[in-house]
Length: 242
Image (cartoon, rainbow, N blue to C red; front, side):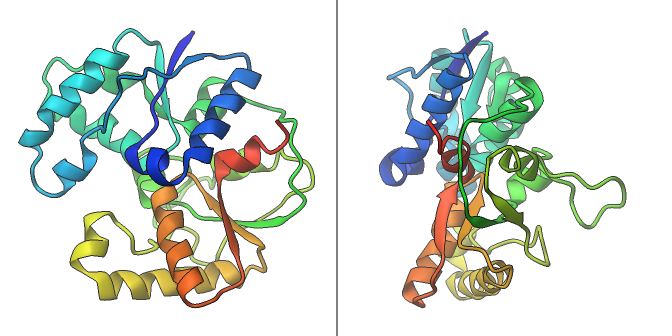
């Protein structure tokens, strides 16, 4: 299979180590992965701000750059969900949306990874980002009955030495929500404080999750309030031994 690696803007600018870890892990697992250098923003910030029609050139660019790959892997649930669900509404002849997978989805559902080389002898609390839960199905929503599952937890449990926890309200929003944090900063901050407290109550040393935007929001609150807890994207932990 030919896999194209898409690195979202905020990962590229603020968390490049997450992109590096994703590439290293995919190569280790034998995936023929390529990073197309002409890639740009997927258009999510513009569309979320109410300018979806103006994001069309970015959607067309993404389609052109990634159309020849079998899969497109992204270390971001929000960008993955936006491309999968919004692109077909913006571009009628879109083909790439069906090929897009968040890295957790790809590892769990496509590669069906059952072993990883890393060691991470720490207690981690899993943050289940909203897009991941309710659009990509990375974990089961608590408001629905049925079998419980969590693909993030499944993968983390393959790492030697790790202790995985989840907060009491396991899929409650952290308050980031992209534009929501800008338009409703006070509500966003309070939601983040509550979520951070729930994670800390697990006794975790680290908070991890599949989206740097949520982790960034919680990390900002933790640093401002001098909370002693660290943050890592899930793929950084999965690639810890490489």
